[in-house]
Length: 380
Image (cartoon, rainbow, N blue to C red; front, side, top):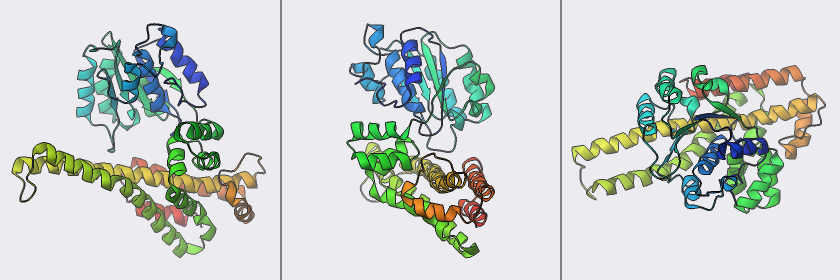
C-alpha cells in the first residue's frame, strides 16, 4: 500500500506528483483543482506524505508505511498543517496564523507544508494576506491550495502556483475503491458510485447507509409527482427538510461530544451555574457550532439539488438519443415516460433553474426555503 492508492482514476496526476516528490519539478506552491469528489484534498495529502516520507530512496517516497507517511495521512504530523473550514469562509485571522506558521522551519521533516483545502472559501482581502508568503516563501515551506477550479482563486495567487488538475474518476474505479478499502458488496458499490456520479465521499456514504440511499431515491423521484404549484411548494418543503435532517443527524452527536469535552477540560462543575469565564468559552463553542450547522445545511442542500439535477440529466440523455449510461438506471422506464412529455429545451430550462438555485444558496445569504420554492415553481 502506498499513499497514492486512494487516487483512483488519476494516473496522470499521480505521475506528476511522484516525479515532483523526487525533486524533479518541485516548487513552493501548488494549486489542486477539480470538481467536488475528484479527490483534491486526498491528492494534496498524499503529496505532502511523499515529500516528507522517511525513505532515503527518492523512488520510494510515499511508501505509506513509514512513520512520516502514517502521521501525515492521519493528520498528526508536526510539520504538516491541514486547513479546512466548517464555516462559510476562512477568516483573515486564520490566514494570518497560517502565514506565521509557514515562517517556521520544519521540526522533523524535510518540509513545512500548509494544505488549504478550502482555498475557494477565502475573501479577496483574506487571500491577499497569503500572497506575500506565497510570493516569497521560506526555503523549506510548501503551500498546497485546493479549489474546484482555477477561477475560484485570485489570479495573483494562481499565477504563482503549479497547477494540478484532477477529474472525476470513472464510476467503476470508485466502486473498486469501495470494495477494496471499505469491504462494500460489489453490487452496492457499483450502484453507490453511479448514484454519487463518481464523488468518492458521497459514494462511500451511500454504500454504507441504506437510509441515505432511500433519501436520495426519494429526492430523485420528486419530479415524477410534480403537478401544479401546490405540489411544487410541498416538494420544496420536503427537499429542505431532507437536507436539514441529514445535516443535523451528523452534527448533533458531534456537538454534544465537543461540549462535554470542553466542560471536562475546563473542570466545570457537574451541577449549578458555570463561572463567567467558562460561560464565555462555552458560548464561543456554541456560536462556532451554529456557523458549522449553517454550512452543513447549505452543503447538504447543494448535494440534494445535485441528486435532483441527475434526474433531468438522465431525461435529457434520453431525449437526445444519447448512449451515455444513465445515473438513475433503476428508474429507466419512468424516465423514458417523463422524457416523452416535453423536449430538450424544456429540460435544459429546468436544469438551469436548479443550477441557479444552487448558486444562490452557496454564494448568498438567501433563505433556503424561498429559493427552493422559486426553483420548484420553475420545474412545473
